[in-house]
Image (cartoon, rainbow, N blue to C red; front, side, top):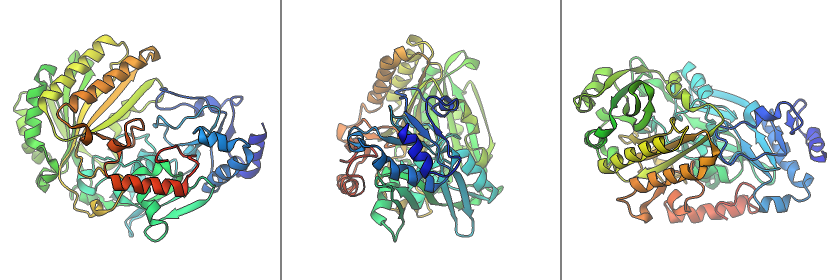
Amino acid sequence: MHLVESLRDKVSKGTPILTKDDNEFTDAHVRWTNIDRKTPAVIVQPLSEDDVVAVVRNLRPCLYKVKVACAANVPFVPASGGHSEWSTVEDGIIIDLSKYKQVSVDADQRTVTVRGGVLMKELQIALSEQGQFTAIANGNTVGVIPYVIGGGISSYSPIVGYACENLLSATLVTSTGTLTTCSSSQNPALLWALRGAGQFFGITTSITLRIYPLSLIHPSPPGIRQIGVVFFPPPRAAEVCQTLKNIVGDSPGENPDKHISSGHFMSMHNPDFGGQVLMVAPQYFGTGPELQKTFQPIIDLEPLHHQHGPSNFEEHSDHLGWMCPKGEYKRFSQTGLVGINPANFARLVDLHRELLETIPGTERSVFTIEWHTSTPKTGARETETAFGMKGVEIWLNILTWYTDPGYHAQVLQFDNRAQEIMRADTREDAYIAYTNTSRNDPVEWRYKDPKAVEKLRALKREWDPDGCFTKEFL
């Protein structure tokens, strides 16, 4: 293939360039979800930033039909941890950053620079070794860079804000194959766009983030937070939800520091309890006795089981490892909510039970309310971003997981019905869809500020007028 040979001449020696004839192609093509998985013609695995530049720069002159390909949104896509539904392309090229990874921690300057396809667990380990932390995702195998530039909702948002609010600078390869630096002094408007809409402007090859001492999570021992798990039978959904609402409030950002927490209230399948069960899982930034006192009203409801204990930053998402394996059919969506409605949540639990009972192989599907309390005191929230969801502290998280693709349309209907239930008391013009889990919802649901949308459109025309990195904002 002429393209493959041309690329081999441009990238560093030993850079894997895989086609369907290579044994490694199949493993390199595995993703977190098989939904809409397409088969590329080539998978390139750059070993350096220069390799990424060389690939993008040479795709345009080497592919005689690249203008047509760009117009159809199929020439190439980047991939990092493989969790994105959009890191796939039919008969095009996947630029897989999994072979190019580097983490550089500067504890004195309170920054970390992440390069290439670093995964969340790898960042956690590197920061923990230096006594530092930052906003991270709830999945060890999530790619750090796409998580940050897509917004970056985090369990640590009550302390340090969203990940994108901590983005200080970045480098990206533009559609012309140019390596561009974005910072407060270089291309600041583009840096603003990368903070929440970065996936639409190029391939981001490195980012520099603010980091914080572990003592900010909890001073002694530093970095320890408390995690609780409390189980209830499904018929008590409205009662438990009302009690949780009384604790975290309808405007959790107004809670005082002594109530700083985040967490999940989920409907899930648990064979230890014979099937569907409710679980309240708070993450509390304080001591065990403080968690016990704050969430005592939940415990007073006499649950099926409850416990709590300490967890450190390095182990943040280890208990969620069961969600990370690649393969099968999974979709994760996040919908912003204006408040916690116990009646709506009870209906959501009924819908989850209907999913489990009517569609085989959906036992690992989970319907969840996620909350964050308190406003960060670090100044990160003052950072201007394109994200535009700074006031959203309550989210509906829908993980649908099934084994038979024949049920795809039916499962998608359950996802849509779940969103309808939880938005029942919300005007459509106030709908919120998390920008990093949806590209189908109207742009007005994903980017709430009309002026920000117009600014993003102008920047898209400036930096990617052909739409090589999706047609969003064109």
